[in-house]
Structures are given as structure tokens and as C-alpha cells.
Length: 262
Length: 257
Ligand code: SF4
Ligand code: SF4
Ligand code: SF4
Image (cartoon, rainbow over all chains, first blue to last red; front, top):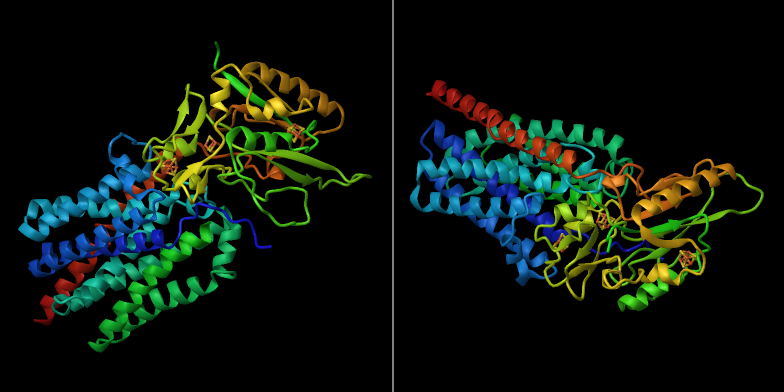
């Protein structure tokens, strides 16, 4: 007989949610900084729409995943400050609205607030998993860091694939490089730390069931190959390939963390 | 009437008849589950929305002349500092009378965060109903002056019910006796864990032998550390590297021109 079925698993909907949140917040933050240092209001407008779409789609996925989707409003009618999910639900709702206002009005002041909201939202998804009894998630304090790094790589990649991306290809590739290296460092720390905090799950990532997700999906396709392309070549053809690989790697990372943990 | 009752479980007296397990199902209207033989009398293999209490079977690692089995009670421990309550975004999982933890299934949205937060994997998802269910401490019985169904059914004195402080004192006496009899690893579980639980367990071995963590993480300090890391991560990761990357590129761009 197969092992015990643990009902109540967080499954692929959650993986997609984490992935979308990363892309949306990362794209917005990247464009926000590029616009701050130079003129890139076109990019910021594009990024705001990407952010609104990704966060709204992510929230919808989370809603579908509920056992009782129509009761989702129960989350918004009481104060539940101890619950990371409650704080996160407000955070993501407010951030989405702020991004929507930026997309429509291009207001600088609102953009600052939306950027703060985006940074906290990108981080909260890590805290959400950390506050649990799942060893791999709660064993280290690194998940918010890891998800933030991946938010920037996937967000910048999404921008580089977008309509206004080519005009800012150089700076987007620079962001991809810097955060790609950071992500690699944090990932290595995460795996080592997990060997102490959650040995079984760590082993399943490095040499067990999730060996493919870690080495091929996250490391080679998501980080190493794009970094190599970004550093070695300037060819424009590689932008699309690099971007797609990074975005796929972000999905593999969320899948790895969510599934190897449970 | 005092509401400070606790369930007392003595692993050294339990004979695994599982009357408690069956009575729990009867009182709480839980369905039977079809399972397969796994080569153990322990059955079902895990808790579920239909099985709120089950007896676990363990074999002693120490060398003895005879095979030695001991039994654990796998159910909600009704923690004071309950992670399941703390993480619930709707307040559906909550303390009743400040002590027992009950889920209001008419308010639960089925997010399963409590499932991920409980150190004992107690709350279980009912896919049909779309909500989480678990042991209620038989509040419907207790509030009317009856013992929980499991306690009532126990033919031995492995399960008892009474004032929590009395149960702790009783457990201390029992532990001393067990130690005299050579069970050097006997210990109380539930007196201090998670600021005190409303099930007082007498274990013959370390909690891990029963599949329970020795030091379940409480919510307070842990939550502060986790949020601390999250906020610092946001403040650092979303400012310094991106500003540096953008500046560097802009400068390079200007020099090229
Ligand atoms: S044992 Fe689990 S479900 Fe029961 S109160 Fe404690 S944390 Fe909640
Ligand atoms: S599944 Fe229900 S009881 Fe559990 S945390 Fe979500 S809303 Fe609360
Ligand atoms: S009814 Fe009593 S003796 Fe029988 S399994 Fe339950 S606790 Fe053990």
C-alpha cells in the first residue's frame, strides 16, 4: 500500500500562486527603480499592468484552492493579526489596487506606496510558509529572501519579454544577473541549512525524489544557464530564451519548496 | 462549574483495545474507513476528517526478553498556545472557554493553513465538505457535565478526566512509580508543551518514539523572528541590489554614449 495520504496538502494551485506573486511584484519593483533613475515611464506602466494581472490571477488561484471559495470574505471581516495569511490577504489586495491606480494615473506618490506593498508582498509569501510546522519551511529563515531574489529575476525576465522590454534590455539583463547570483547564494545557504533543520526533505531535494526539480529545473535552467547567457553573450536572440528559462526556473523553485516540504 | 478539565492518558495502562477510537466515531457521527492491512494492528494509518482519535502502536527499541509494545493516543492535544488557532485567517479555529480548541465548520474556508501549522498534523481536510475537522474535546458532552466519549468508554484506567491540576498531580505520582519499576524514560507530556495542553500524556519513552516532537514550536517568539526576517528581507533585497544594478547599468550606458 502506498504511504498515508495526508489530506489537506497544499498543491499546485499554491505553487502557481507563489510564482505569480513573484513575477508581478518583481516586475513592478524593477520597473519602479529603472524609472526612478532614468525615464522609463513606459516600462513602469507596462509593469503595473503585469503586476495587477499577476497578483489578481494569483489571488484567484488561491481562491479556487479553498475548500469553500464562496466563503473567502470570512477572511476580511475579522481582525486576525496573528495569521500571516490574513495579513497577506490584505497586503496583496491593497498592493493590487495601488498598482492599478499607478497603471491608470501614473501617479509618482502612489507608485512609492505600491513599491513598498510589492516588496512586502514578495516577502510575505516566504513568511507564510515559514510560519508552519513543516520542517523544510520553518527550519530556516531564508524563504522570504529566496522568494524575493526569485521575484526580481522572474519579474525582470517578464519585463524583458514584454513589449517595452527591448528598449531596456541592458538594464533588465543587469538586474537578472545581480539577482541570479544572489538567488544562487541564498539557495545554497538554504539547502545547507535545511540539512540541519530538515534532513529528510533536504536529502529528497539534493539526491532523492526532487533531484530533477532542484538540479535541472531550479539550478541549471533557472539560474546557471541564464547567468551564463547573460554574462557571455549580448545577442538579442538569446533574450527570449533567457527570459523563458528564468521564468520556468521560478516555477520549479516554488514547486520544489512546496512539494519537498510536505 | 470549573471548566479547567483535562483528559489524562496513561500509555503504560493502555492495552490498545481501541474502544475509545470507536466510541469517538459513534458519538461524533464519523464514517468508517476502508483501509488495507499494512502488517500492523495500528489502523487507520493516520487521522482524517472521519477519524479524530486513533491509538498508535510502537515497539520498544531496547532489548528485552519479550516483545514489548506500547501505545500512543493520537488526537488533538488542545494546546493553550495553539499554532492552529494563531494561523487561522478567519478565526474559525478558536479556543472555547479559553481552553479547548474547536473548529467552527460553518465559518472555516478550507484554506488548510491550520493543517500545516499543527505540530501533530491533527486538523484534517474533509474534501467533500471543503472544511477542516478534528477532535472537539467533546465540548457538547463536557458542557453538559459528561466526560468526553473516549474517556467514558475506556475499560481500563488508561483514560481519565478531571481538573487539569489534579490530573497533573496524578501523572507525577504515576511517573515516579513507573520510574521505580524501571521505566527510566517515562515522562509527562502536555504539562508545559505549547504553554500547557488539555491532554496530559504519560509516555513510557521520549515523545519522538510516539511520533510527537519534544519541543513543539510555540507561536509568539517564532512569529516575531519569522516576520523579522521577512521585513528585513523586503527592506534589503528590494532596495540595495536593485539600486546598485540599475545605477551600474545607467552609468555604463552614459559612458558608452
Ligand atoms: S494539537 Fe494541533 S490541532 Fe490541536 S490545538 Fe494543538 S495545534 Fe491545534
Ligand atoms: S482551514 Fe479553516 S480552520 Fe483551518 S486555518 Fe483555514 S479557515 Fe481556519
Ligand atoms: S479505550 Fe482505553 S485501553 Fe482501550 S485503547 Fe482507548 S485508552 Fe487504550
